[in-house]
Length: 266
Image (cartoon, rainbow, N blue to C red; front, side, top):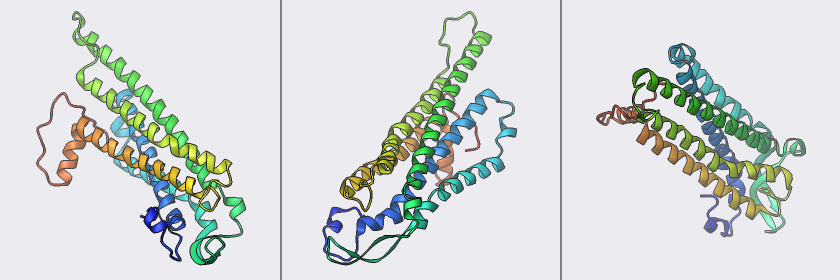
């Protein structure tokens, strides 16, 4: 709402674009990183489920899952400390408007902390990319290996497909989730690097309009990623679909025995 051109063009004493910087911009970035790291954990849990099917319930317990999710939240929230410790809102004189306006004001420690949150955002997101790609590759290889073993053990004399429909759906699902995450999050990683490298590309720099425009499209891609994930899980995971329906008190549909069934704790 703060980035609406109508508000930006109003002759008011409030700089809405600067207000959006701390109230919605960084919380959104933090939430997107939490999403990417939760995806990393889900993918890792799936890998262990395939590699250690008899031990997974002892390795990934509900208590450990809760602890890991809490740690993911804490680390990503703490990464915002440098930004919020050096920036705040107050009334200040604006040269361009030639009057006192309500907007961003920086503390004396800004030169030391400026750019750290963007550095954390880019590095945390990149690490999650590599982790998702690694776990997805391992998962696909393990699914192919187990499918071939099952094929030899059960239908050694038949020329049938080496992977069941269920395994294929699982592989397609994890690959699509990983692809969606990377494609939708890469632009914000690039923008973080540009923000660190180009001093004028900031919320108070000469390139503020380009800054807001680019980050708006980046945030839009984050929203697209979240919606795509929900659709993928709902369409391809029978357990996710039945759990979602039970939470909203809808009668569970008949579960297709060939549907992808994720037995993890998430």
